[in-house]
Length: 109
Image (cartoon, rainbow, N blue to C red; front, side, top):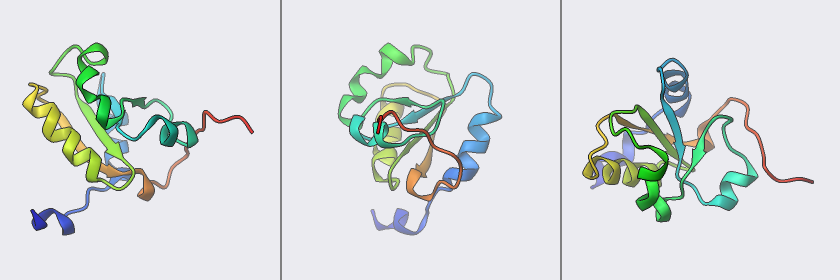
């Protein structure tokens, strides 16, 4: 359990891999509110507690899916869940809090 505390995924590397992978999906498993505050353009949002609906959005279980959240804890759980549901090509890329690229917002000021 504690072995993953020091094994942090690099979201910046993960985003580069997502951009360079044909037909890949960037999956943000944060809450709708977190996603609306800021997110990476091109990502889709399925909150962790709604992940049971994933087959409505990602029908081909061989699709490359790059998963992130805020810090990396929820994305790790999401990847484990997706693998139990038969998704074959899922990668945990960690937390958006370490992302250095541009983000967009759905909130209107």
